[in-house]
Length: 156
Image (cartoon, rainbow, N blue to C red):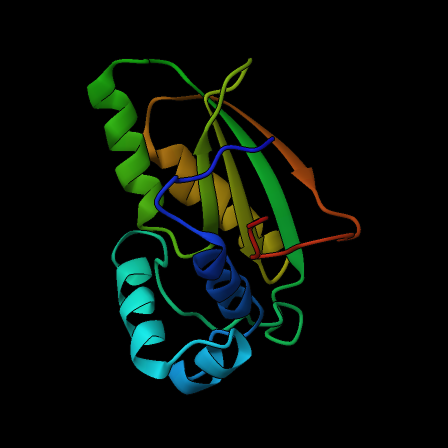
């Protein structure tokens, strides 16, 4: 059995599922879908927006925007002091091509997901942005050949 925030009941979970499927639903549409009054639904939605719902976003087609190269970049740092790691993380946060950054276990310290137009732009990001942050000991890159699944939805 999976563990959840105990403050969420089945109605909250239904609201979250609906929002993940379509973040543009109005409060009235959500209320009608889950058979709840609009004021009661609004109250629940506002509570969920305080700590569970982090925002509403449009999902864009990266290929339609010419962003055809998706890379997974493993980074190993030279220095693992808290200050050095914070500096690396702050640097990575400034790069719009880095769409995700995870501090990971195992051989490498970070896994970055990078989206760019082409190999030339990837080289620019990897060699002239990430590497020059300093403290980078090793970079190991894998390129996505084919995307099988990508979902912004969480299993609620």
